[in-house]
Amino acid sequence: MTVRAGREFLAIPGPTVMPDEVLQAMHRPALDIYSREMIALSDGLHRDLGTLFATKGRCYIHISNGHGAWESVISNVLSRGDKLLVLESGRFAIGWGHAAELMGAEVEVLKGDWRRAVRPDEVEARLRKDKNHEIKAIVIAQVDTASGVVNDIEAIGKAIRAAGHPALYMVDAVASLGCMPFEMDKWGIDVAMSGSQKGLMTPPGLGFVAANDRAQAVHKKANMRTPYWDWTEREGTEHYRRYAGTAPVHLLFAMRQAVDMLFAEGLENVFQRHRLLAEAVRRAVAVWAEGQVLGFNIAEAGERSDTVTTVTVSGDYDPLKLQHYCKEKCGVVLGMGIGDLQGQAFRIAHMGHVNAPMILGTLGVVEVGLNALQMPHGKGGLEAAVSYLGENVSA
Ligand SMILES: *Cc1c(COP(=O)(O)O)cnc(C)c1O
Image (tube, rainbow, N blue to C red; front, side):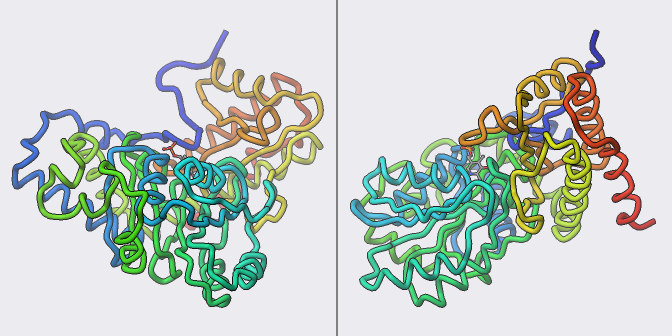
């Protein structure tokens, strides 16, 4: 017996739910990649990426996922042997650093932990010790999708400037762009990267990078540059070169539609929708936690991300069983714990094309699963989420 039918609902942090309009935007023939229409589409999206990142810097669209965009950044600004400082708060900045190491950089991890955000004062202290400026770049994820933390990117930018350190400040916004404020220029970020399949509601396959003048200057001398990623090769008006070959025409159609939808809703409204739905999830988790088995991975309430919530599961209870139940019986796919949290957590994504029925439905299904599997939990989590939205979404 199941109560699943119709569309499976993805509550995983990417790929996320794509609006029907985005899916439909791809249902058309390809364009002549040299046509004026194609150039206008591509130019418009590069411009709009600048708006999303809030930068006057140059934007690049690669045919890649987030890992590709990481590699683009590393290869374009580092030279072999350069030192990269990784700010740990989960898995993703570490993954970026790992790629850099394999490419020939020297990597130092500023030890953090999986239960909290990066501390700006610790960053400042480390940089002050680097008197010879051996550290050439610093990487961090705004939201770490594994731990569920949100880092204060603005405060860390200030800490880097307070230390008077010239390293490039490079931020992973894969799990946050288009979901929460991101101010590349205002926050002193030199390079930012993201991908299409999370907050931007577009199929996987596009990697985004933005780089300011400081990064462009470093790029000129970087020696890890390779043909596919090279920013200089990506410039000029010829669109065949922009994409290092044939443009990903259909993904661009999809992205155009998704970005139009975000701008039509208004970015501030999009961010507020994410805040409200994230808090609804947290209200439910807080109640479930009263059963002493489930809990928030991120200890401090203010450090929990508005795009994904990581819920720890303790004792002999298996989050994988809950995930299977929700998927096989109810058609809702939860994210699992990854990295250090493998087998010890599940994740509820609330990023991109999400609304009240999707989130309340997901929370309801989790409760169904907790009951069916007799996993101890405080009763009334869904009700707390409902009450919160009723009190905070004004009539
Ligand atoms: C998903 C994710 C990535 C990796 O993106 P892929 O498209 O899977 O390569 C990188 N960083 C963060 C923060 C992510 O959430």
